[in-house]
Structures are given as C-alpha cells and as structure tokens.
Length: 453
Ligand SMILES: Cc1ncc(COP(=O)(O)O)c(C=O)c1O
Image: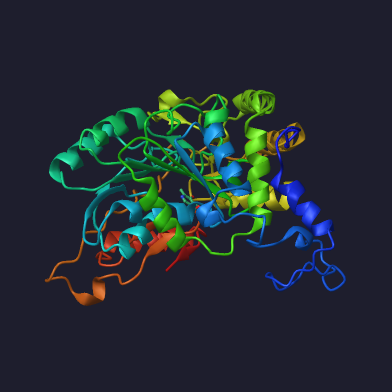
C-alpha cells in the first residue's frame, strides 16, 4: 500500500530535512532532538513545534494550510482543519462555536462524553433524542428523523442538533433527511463522525456519509479508521449556517498551542493517501466480503450485517461493514467472555465488549491474514458454544429523569456514569439514579463492563 504521493511537498520531508540540518534548536520541545540523550525508538528526531518556516496551526498560512487544503479536497468540504486533540477538541469547538450560555440544544442520548462536556461547559439546556435499541444485539439503532422533527417542534429555539454517525458499533443514520429537517429551522446539524473518517472512501460504509448529505460540521477521527497516528482528527465545515471564524476562535481555546508536528505529518500523509486510495479501499472491500462469506457458517454467534445477517433484520438506516459486531445473545457466553477467549486462545484483541456483543474494528490497513485469523477463530468458537433458544436479553438502557425540587438529594447524581468504552453516559449530573438505573449499572459491572464515574 502506498501512502505518500510523489508529487506534493511533504510536511514529513521538511521535518526530516530540518532534523538532518545543522540548525541548533534553542526552542521547544525540551528533548532537543538529542538522539544521544534519547535512546528510545520514538520520533524525537522530527518532533518540533511551531518554529520559523513551519507555519502556525492556529493561523495556518503556509505548509499547514497546504495540509488543511489537501483535507478539504479529500473530504469535499468548504473548510477543513487538522486536529491534534482528537475528535474531542473538534466536538468541544463545534458546539461552543454555535451556542451561547444557557441555550437549548438537541443531542442524541448515545452521544460521546465530549458532546456532554461541551453542553456542560456552555450551561446548555439539553433535550434528548433516544435512539431505540436493537432487540437481539442491544446496540443503539439509527437516529429516527421523526424523533428529531418532534423535538424540534417541541423546542423550536434549539440552536443545534448533534448526533453520532456511524456509532461505535457502525450504525449509520439518515443524515440527508435529518439535515433537511434541521435546516428548516435554520440551525446546524453537527455530526460526530469520529468513527467515520473512511466513509467517503469506502463503498461498504458510504451510505449516509455526512458531508455529501448536508451536515454542517463533521468531526472525524483519522486515527480510528485510517492510517494516521492516535489523537489525529479532522473537522470539516460546509454550508452558510456555521461561521468559520467562530469555529476557529473556539479551536484556539480547546486545542493546544503546541501542536505536534509528528501528528500533523501523519495527517498530511493520510490526506495524500486519501487522494489515491481507490484501489486500497477496493481491496479492503474484497477482504470484508470474503470475511462476510465465511461468517455464513456461524450457527450460534452472529455478526451484524455480515454472513447470514442483514441490515433488514435490524432496521438500521445504514451500517458500516468495517465494524465487525459479534453478537453473543443466542449463546451461553457474553461478549466480554468472547473477547477473553479470543485474547487467550487466539491472540486476537478486540476493540470493546458488552454483555451481548463484542466489536472488532477493521480498517483499510487490515491484512487478509488478519481477517482469516478472526474468521477461523469465530468459526471454531461457534462450534464449541451452546445455542440458547430464548435468551435473557440485557435490559434497555435506562432513561433517568431530571431531578426536581422534590427529589431526595441522595438519589441525584453529581457525576457522569458511563461504560468505557464507548464513553456514552448512562447517567448525567442532575439526573435521578432510580432503582432501574442502579440495577442496570450493577448488571453491567457484574458482566465485567468497566463503569467509570
Ligand atoms: C463516538 C465518539 N465520538 C468522539 C470520540 C472522541 O474521539 P477522540 O478519541 O478522537 O477524541 C470517541 C472516542 O472513542 C467516540 O467513540
């Protein structure tokens, strides 16, 4: 796989040139690229900060503007911004660039904690869209356009709508119809696309791709599904509703003033790759299709939208086939136990596990051997399991009420409580921890899910 194109000026090449020059660094970072002092295999030699000739991320005019322009062309947006603080800093900036303190906002309840933190920081009055849960796997389904419409009718002064698509589990929402309804109120749709940076480039994931379907701000983690280093992400803006200057202002609040050139160079290479990635993604689709075919032999486990399973069974608007969601509901093991078996017996580490499923994240960089290993392991494990005809389904995610003046203070949460991963809150500060919620949290913990407060 070829990641860098031959023709464009590479941030990486400039960094190498600088590291090989005799320029003495009386500047940050403190390690001074002194490789005699730093025996580790880390990229100290190209780790610089914003020095002469290397532009300024917060007012990009030169080499970093070139990278942002490359991203804009690759993603087809009006403005693109490299982010060195993950999607988290993009989401905080996006929400904060639109609202004023005390405003109303509509968000999907299954949003990531960064969306909740943005709401808290801006003291927002939050109205929730509650996506339904799939009966068997218990994953959250697509955001329903009618629910967005109903909430906008009820709260017409809301300043933005925020949803996640695709979700951690690969579920895609109908961005076109949601953005149409949101725009009829002349407010922006922000899409947390942390798991969908590859969507535009992969035909098996492309449905509901947010930029071509009208979302106003789209935040995508490059590091989750593309060849780029951890913490790298991109913010894409389009349309006339959102103001580029306000977004930039907020980025300068939430993003470090010492952006890593190692991270930015990895993003720059990734954008080059994206402009020449058709074959690589086609080969990835072939690997996914071959994996999917192998999953048809499963009798007890199932894999969402792969093998014998199909999108029609679940009623998702769309599904990112790059997410391998292995459902254990009809077996005698949980998703957490499945990850343990895969780890211990097959040396395969999955991304996350829940009582009823486990998620293997794939990308264009996965090899055929990798897919074959997973397919072999799942087929073998499946044979060893018992089929459970009428499973006890894990309960619905609770919908705790907002506390009121009559609520006993001891029952009111002063913290976020969330399962990590995926970092989606179960209870937020100011909500009542009732018996159903308490039992749900206890059940999660008992099943081996890490619950963080
Ligand atoms: C849905 C979702 N949104 C946002 C984020 C934050 O992304 P990042 O880790 O790039 O800051 C995550 C991280 O897991 C996520 O799952």
